[in-house]
Figure 1 (spheres, one colour):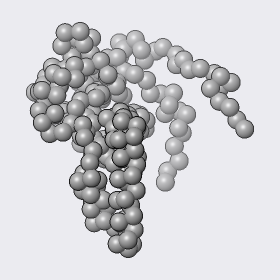
Figure 2 (cartoon, rainbow, N blue to C red):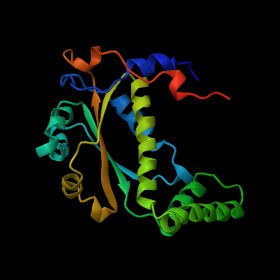
Figure 3 (cartoon, rainbow, N blue to C red):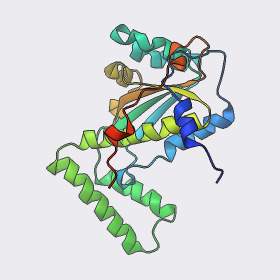
Figure 4 (cartoon, helix red, strand yellow):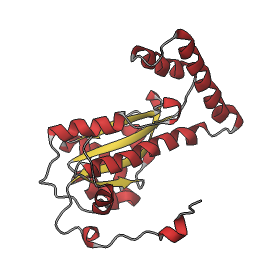
Length: 220
């Protein structure tokens, strides 16, 4: 594996406020973007997500319906981006879905013995039921897995030299209706615009600001 300078990447990336609409992401990096989304870790490998990806004007116009009204400040970040990804979370997780994931793991060679497969599915059900019935936070738990994906994604695209802007300021209901997500068992969560920073993006020239190491770390 090639050595990368993680600090350099972290300092290069920022929340892009304006994209250069003339600069487009290559087809090679389109595949890398999909790999980042698909290969993200999740609790018990639950993968409770779906992604709507657009690079076309028509597609971005549909996604921009989630930036009307109060959220209009995000419209240009959708329309001027090279690509936009809508991160969606499942709205229900049950044994049938867990069996579906486990069967895919089995086909991919994850279990050396049938008993390991049975044990794995049992563990999935135990941890899922803790969230469904004991903590009663299954939706929040699934949302957290999607946010894990987003964090992984933002660093990954930065490593590819691609700028990004995560947007929670979106009309969830409008997007769910536009793409029929709730009928499919999903709901919108976060939209991420991708592309290359515009020359006049004010945020590109501002210094980063983070709390000090002394404040955020305890080393023991």
